Image 1: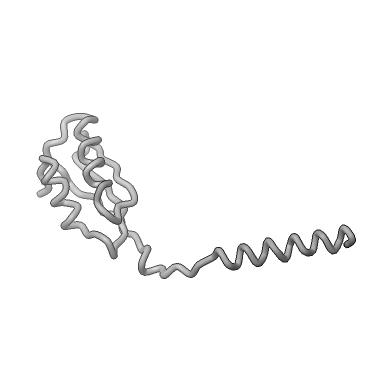
Image 2: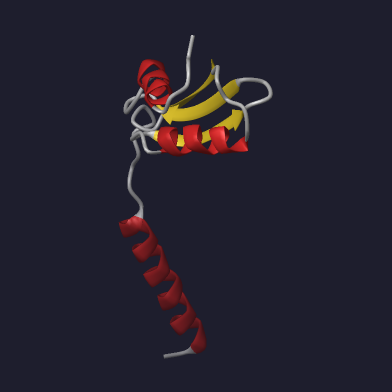
Length: 99
């Protein structure tokens, strides 16, 4: 086997492995939405952490950012797994008000 044949076989093997590992992802299944919720009762960074810890535990939540000074929580979530109402209820359960 020549060096060129060897290199071609490596490229072919790599291509076959990559092709077998790729999978088609339905864009609707993983569609995300961002929502900003007004939250009353946050007074410190600890409140921010409490809220985001609770929110991140909700299936489908990708990120959470809270700002106690502004009284806002921003959440990015998968629309097929949760919704704004579930997020608001989670925050209420954590002890804060979502008007």
